[in-house]
Length: 508
Image 1 (cartoon, rainbow, N blue to C red):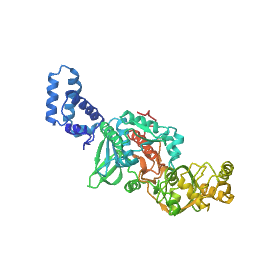
Image 2 (cartoon, rainbow, N blue to C red; image 1 turned 180 degrees about the vertical axis):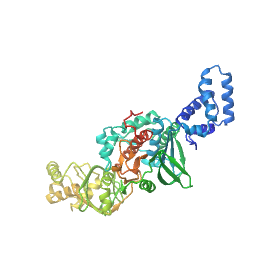
Image 3 (cartoon, helix red, strand yellow; image 1 turned 60 degrees about the vertical axis):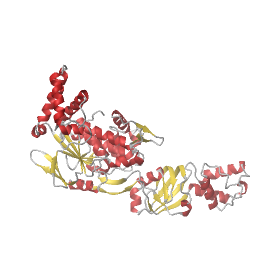
Image 4 (cartoon, rainbow, N blue to C red; image 1 turned 90 degrees about the vertical axis):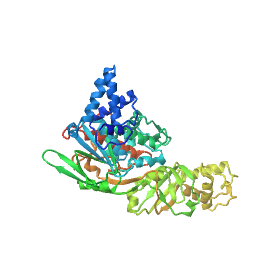
């Protein structure tokens, strides 16, 4: 047992869950190791020899009174004694952002709760590692819950109350207390100051280890079922190798994995069909393709799908060799995810390349410019802050010769230029990819989850966090924030007595 605890100091998960009391002894053992300068790789016998030698000859009663009795007690404590001190056993299925955060919150908040994360792969927190191009866009710099909630096409109403309890400000403070300082960029995205996702992974893994959370990788759950008897109600997990374990609380944090949806259905939940969210637009237009690589800071996009409400977003847009990308496109794809899926990603897109103008206001600008600069050539004399290559392409669409000056530019030509700039029409023929985030909309029906606790309204003892829920956000750290928030609430709730009245606790 002692060797397992010693190993866990180097972030190797112990195969045996630790109780709250054992976690306290674990911290004492670590402090004792530091005080006595015991080598990290010391075997159990060598460790005990140093401890006994120090205790017998130490002048300090603190070492004898505080450390040694607890360590000896821990070494000889049998499994029955250990289990007798555990009041709840909690399983977290899924070793991603929401799973880790929920496990840590539960273990840190509640005494005598045994928390184990079961991750089917050998690499937990994989998505955290690759997000944001390896930098990890951990949250968004928005500290007003009402404003933040608007960034979620699905789940905004349910998350509003949740954000009042744990929001990006709390996320920043949580990681800062554990040595992972965050920074905000101009667009609101927040990253670790190191610009390395490994910083966040290390922080979560260390926090889990310090809280006594056990992480079992390669532990693939294949089935779940509820067990009811007169003594207690539990949920039984069956693993691929045939092992079966029972838990008092189970947190499903499996992301968009079909297996997680299957488990929720096994326990009585309805799954809202999943479709992709956050993707780019594929547009097969030679005129647009020739402008690949150009970017525009403020473009207004309007999505037109047959028989559906118009959807609109404004923001930066990038022209690519396959169509359009950028924040405005991604936001529009998120809010229009179901419409586009239903139309098989066939729709019309209106593009206003200069969002603060319409046709009439731009025509007025053109006429004023012609009065002031009549001899300037239209092709090279743009009055707008647009890339030259783009302006020349727009002017050529109006059949304006390269040598025509503004004084000789006809009203019809100016109107066509203004129309192309503010009411450009393109045909979306498919969806592209957005490799920085992998998001779907759909999942566990939100009506079946109590967002005060994240507990199932269908199956008591079952909790949800993260993307398994029918929640998805726009790009910029919103999806990670919903994972932190729902994981934190679920973790704080899982150790409570089921009939105990729920109440908020201060963030720690």
